[in-house]
Length: 398
Length: 222
Ligand SMILES: Nc1ncnc2c1ncn2[C@@H]1O[C@H](COP(=O)(O)OP(=O)(O)OP(=O)(O)O)[C@@H](O)[C@H]1O
Ligand SMILES: [Mg+2]
Image (cartoon, rainbow over all chains, first blue to last red; front, side, top):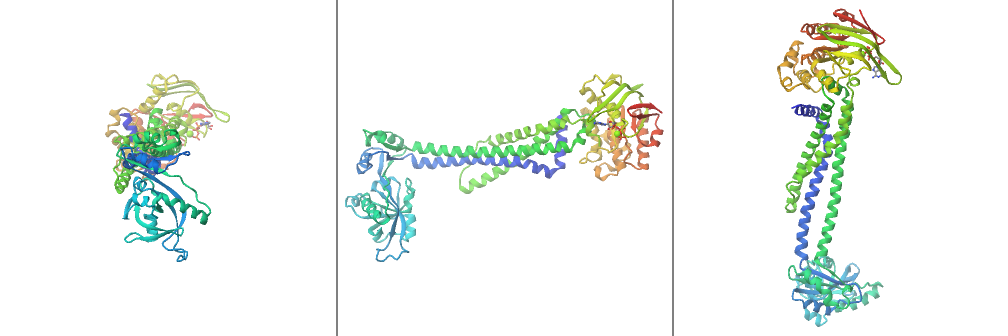
């Protein structure tokens, strides 16, 4: 009963300085708001991210050479022998920047030349990196066997050159040498950079590199990556055996990136980011507690005569202490409730904009509320002690 | 019946230099008496009143209140006596600015038992006894100085104390309001409540049944 009375006094005192109370509790409100948003968003987005990674990576893996072991046409066919493998092939970047034009060098007047990367991919590689035709067609094995000089445009480059559709055969000049455009492709799941350049067949690489050496003076040779596409959920199993199949004598000379690695990595990154943000949110909640503590401390000093009067009226030290703690609890409770509510409303709006389903355990708001109130409680302890120690005699002197 | 007995009470403040505020005070006050306390500034009047009101402890001597020795009583005992048996009136009113008149009167019961605190009639009656029923919902800022002191007086007596201590209650008031407060204190006294009033006002002091003068920490009857 006495507690209820003292709580009432605390409430009345906060209500009389309503605006100040709002400002005082805003720190806790901001802290709890950020906390609930960060925790929920990180869970939501990592759930979302994992879905994407799952859908794309549980059926693909890559092999790179870390030694003298070549990744070549033979590697492709070895990989293709795995019954679980649905597509396998090489793809790599050949040059970072090469002049590309729709015109011969005679016709070129500078403005029509685009500097673009050149990639190479075998027909199987194109399929393994998930290339999808948006116009024309992809390479086929016949073109590779006949050693045709053909090229596929990435979507971004095709837009830049103004060739969205490949209806009739057209010629593209890569560093002055003619190639027939067979198609425009997009959606390179395993090799997204390919959208920015042109893709040639592996046999063309040598001539591009040599002419590039002449014109640019440099031409870093990027080593091929073997992309392997498997039946769903077989990627990890293939990954565990592929190195031995490709290079029985030197298994460690190959680097196999299995989906588990990618999954783990992205998971770790997401987790670290979340931890960092949560730490920030906790910090701002603590800061909110500091604001409450500071305000109540000042309040204790400005209310010395009121405290003295209450003591004269028969308030025990504990009654004064309780009143200050109650004020702190009320402030942090109200602040937390407001912060959590704003956070939840914001989350629902934000996630619905992105079409996500918020992932949140139902106890989270309660946990954040408990945290906010706990911070307020701790913040109130010092002011409460100060107030309870004020001697009534000195307090009533004026 | 004797309500208060002080014997050999001494109090020294130890601030920059030690100040002997009270030296060897002997005093006996009968229940229901009206006592005035005069003295020059700094003679120790407020110090004595604080000791009588159990707000402060003397350094030595004996203080018997209602036949109980206060020097050896615990703080809890003295706090509950303060709540139950002692009322205070100060020169500067000390009303709570965020509460209206009736709520301020009710704070006199804030730290009492539930049955008393929840009795809504006591504050009403106390406010009526000081003639302020029509100012019930006014905040202190909306009251005159005299009215504020009457609210403070109602707060002091709402819990039916044995002893009301007033430290220059009319110090901030004009003659007319001072007389009003004096007559209210007289009627409180007539109900059997002991009143001790520190005052510079000769007229008020002379109307008391027992008159004391403090001089440099020593007390003398007049
Ligand atoms: N807290 C304190 N610390 C140190 N000295 C004090 C303290 N309170 C009072 N004194 C000193 O004790 C003496 C008595 O003070 P007290 O307040 O009792 O005087 P008073 O008679 O009430 O004076 P006034 O009429 O001006 O109110 C004074 O000399 C004062 O300076
Ligand atoms: Mg004084």
